[in-house]
Image (cartoon, rainbow, N blue to C red; front, side, top):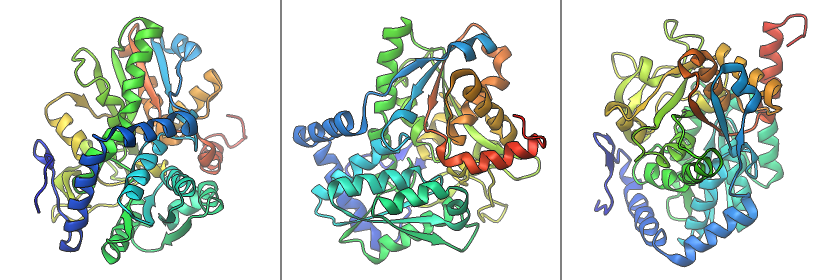
Length: 398
């Protein structure tokens, strides 16, 4: 396989894929390198992001949250993008690329359902057939998004094996692509997988950080001290981080899912409890046992319930450019409640992890300027939230 672009981020990344997919991956890289330099393609994508998706998304000063924690907090509002999350930045880009390549069928995976909805949306807009794989556990806890996908014309296949979450959905989507690599394009939803996917997804998502940097300079008159985002596979975080990569005084913080705590093993914090290995086509940090078998994960948020992290994050971690702490389920729920009750914003449970970490670290963040990426809205999580908050508050008060 002859690839033109670098396939790794430091030691991480690479192309660990079946032979059947090597030619499609090479074709995808060729198309990506050609069209990212094509003014007509980039102009069409920019118009879709502006006139259809609703970019730029606002940067909101969180005044009451700021007062409560003693820091200057700003929110990048990806929850206000069409479909309710940052995922549409990538799905519009990849679907447009696939159509230019002559593909007619789109395959996708989804955990929280936001990538599935965004993929179904892009396919409906561009006239592409859409199949989305979703773990049965995620399908049950993210039912509203499953219904949205079906209403948009997508075929949703529930995965009934394994842990029945995001990892298993990715497995099935990749198997489907192996079976039909010529007519189908696998529209991977996060900055992971074999090259060139991590680079493609990051490029389509870096608009988040580019906008946020210009906006905070215009509105606050200075760069943030800290830029914070939740990290599952890592697309919203890498999108934010790329905007500040060269600003060495801006601390980059990616918040993982601490689940029920690291000691008990029921979590999805790859840097706190994992080690380097290969999963889904890339060498990166993942949760694995001593024999290299992938460990089960847990998070209250379906979108963070995944055992590996994108390879660009692994490289940022190892060279110390970004840090990757975690927030537990309980801390994420506190983050959700704080943003809801202080700012009138219902964030996705994924985004609530970033807010929860900021609340936890408020003593260290006093008088600092903090930028939080609100990667999605919480409509999809209402049943999960009702159950979780009801358990915390048996009387029903929250």
